Image: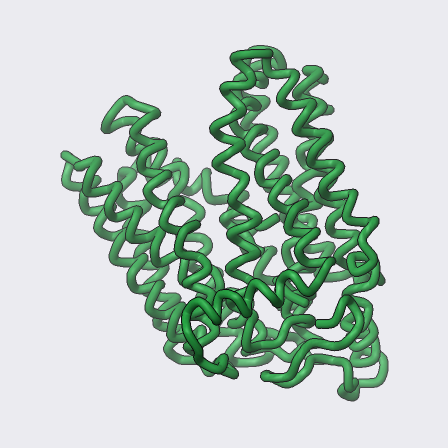
Length: 441
C-alpha cells in the first residue's frame, strides 16, 4: 500500500495545512498578550474571543451546506484568503502602536465567519484527495502536525512577541494562510456535489443523516461533554495549580505535557487498527476525568501532570480515528454538513463551561464543579459503549485496510468511490473533528 504523501494532491494539501497550522499555533498566546498589554483588561480579551467564536458557531450549519454544494477546495481557498486578510489587518493594527479594540474585534469576527465555512471542508478535502484505505494514515499525519503545532506554538509566539512584537505573529499567520491558499489552487479535489434544493431542505437532510446513526449522535454527546469539561478545567486549573500545587510552573508543565500527549495519541492512531475504533476512541476521551479528579483533590503535581498527559493522549488518538470513520461511513454528498453539525454540537458546551465554572467555584468552591464535571465526562464518553452502533462501526474499514496491506489489491470495501453511500452495518449509513484546533472532541 502506498503512502498518502506519494499522492501529489494530498502532499500539497498536507504542506499547506502544515504551514497554516504552524501559523495558527502562535496566535492564541500572541493575542492574549497583545490585548492585555493594550487594554489591561481580561474582559477585553473575552470580548475579542467571543467575537470570533459566536459567528463561527452560528454559521457552521450554513458552512456545511456550502461545503456540500461547492467544491471544498474552492471554499477552503476563499476562506484562507479572507482569514489571511483579517490576520494581517490585526498585525498591522498592533505594529502601528495604537491598536483599536473595535478594529481587532471586527477583524476577529470576520475570521470567525470564514472559519465557519472552512471547518466543514476539512474532512471532504481529505476524502477528495486520498482513497479510503489511506485515509487513516492521512488523517493521522494531519493530526500529528496539529499536535506538534500545539507543542511548539506558544514557544514560537513568545519569541516573536518579545523580539519583533505581537503584531508580527499575526502577520506570520496571515502569510501562512496565503501559502495554504496558493497550494490549494494547485490541487484537484474529487467532489460529488449535493443535489441542490432549498437551504432548509439541505440543513434537514444533513440533520437526518446525523440522527440516523446511533453511534454518531451519541458520540457527539460525549464529545460535547468533553469540551464542556475542558472549559471547566481551563478556567479553574491555573489558579489551583498556582495556589495549591506549587506555582504557575505546574500549569505550564500541564499544558506542555498535554501537547506531548496529543502528539503521542496522533502517532499511535497512525499505527494501530482497532477492531472497534469509535468505542476505543470514546473510552480514551473518558480519561479526561483523571485530571479533573486530580485537580479536585489537589493531588501532587507529578500525578496531575501525568493525568493530563494521559487525557490528552486520548484526544490525540480520537481525532484522526474519528475523521477516518466519518469519511468512511457518510456519503460524500453530505460530508460537509454532518461535519458542520459535528463541530457545532461538540463545541457548543464550551461557552457553557467557561461561564458556569467560575460561578460554581465561587458558590461552592472549586472541588465541587470539578468532581461533577469528572463524573459527567466519564459517563458521557464511556457510556457510549452501551450503544450497539458504537461497538460495531468501523470494522468494515479496518478489514479493507488489512486486505489492502496483505494482498496489495483493492478490496471492494476499501474506500467507496465519491458519490456512493456508506456501507450497510452501523445503523445504516456514518461520519467526521475536529478538530479540532479548535479542539475536536
